[in-house]
Length: 112
Length: 436
Image 1 (cartoon, rainbow over the protein chains, first blue to last red):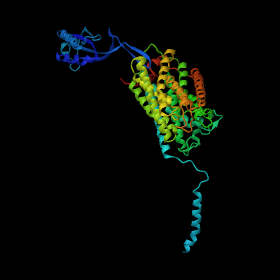
Image 2 (cartoon, each protein chain N blue to C red):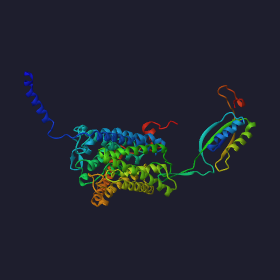
Image 3 (cartoon, rainbow over the protein chains, first blue to last red):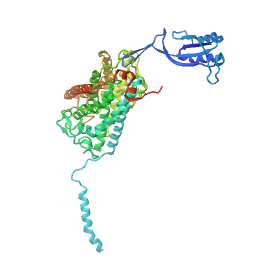
């Protein structure tokens, strides 16, 4: 089992979610985050005082998938989230030790 | 028949007595319901300006200080309302002592009844005039507090508000508006409070900003407004209430109040345009904050002149107000002091320009009880206005400085560094403005 973390542009969130559910992904967790990579921020001006805003709003999607689905999920996210412009985001894959379904106590792949 | 003959002389005497009683020895001032209605409504309008100011300011501070900022304005309503009816009104408008201050014979509103006081307002109950003036006494210290937002101890703020109102607002109000007040006697004019409200608060605000020092992280940490929608809501309430502030100062309902209403609106519009367009040209984009700041600048600047000028000069005053105040606010960034919400830049500068513009454009055609200004052939008025402005500047600055210094030694002015970090809402009031 792997945990896939994807940081994407907020307006792409719906598109990514729809694409994932289409290939059979059953759940995910989404957080609103701030961050930057190579995308530059912007400047806001309030009564002449300039504020350089480096952090940009992004959406973070986390999902747990069984090993066989990893490649397909990554490709789906890449396709749906891409705009071709700087700031599209990144995907991270990390191993998962255990997954438990709270309601039933199921463990492992059955709990995904 | 016998009965009528008995009662007839008594009847004649009775009617003769009634005829004589119909002409009283001295006529009592008659209360005009139109004037009274307008004055009471105006009092309510100006009252609403203080919560409006609270929102205007609160939207511009960081979210951890939103309640602390609102709380200051709201508590001032309560504090100064009591101070006013106990002795503030008496000091400001009571029987004059040497042109400097009123005495305390009206303590607890003794002698301030419902019959009109012809010295101030011949056609409305005296208490209506008193309560109208109360709203001005309330909003003035609330304006001042904007300069030292996000860093003042609440305890000290309470004491400072009461002392400042008594030692700065009440005397200046007496000089300009009180019977026997020396500026009034000298011919100085201030229709609705350019000197009494905007200069006093604006210059005192500068003193306070300099004495309290900058907010921690000023210049390096981001301190952008946390809710401009809140600020715009506040500004809208201020514009609306300003009709009571300026047009209500006519104390009558009719031609003068209409004139003041119209020029107030025009100046607000002019200020909004010139600040927003100035930003557009100079910085590349017109901002919401700029537009509402310009409107407030225009409204503040027309305040002293609102009962003395005609519409076209009012437009000029509004447009230049937005321009001058915009420059003053930009200039602040050069000098490096932290007048957090630009009280000096907008009210100090606006009130000053307005009081002087009065000296240029005033015309007796609008208000016979006023005067003609420079452009109408009377240069003297401008001189009197300049003197009044200068004295108000000096007095406000010095007394505020001394007062704050004493409070700093005795009570401390600023919250601790840790309290400033966690924010006034939590540290001073144990509350959170937003629960997410």
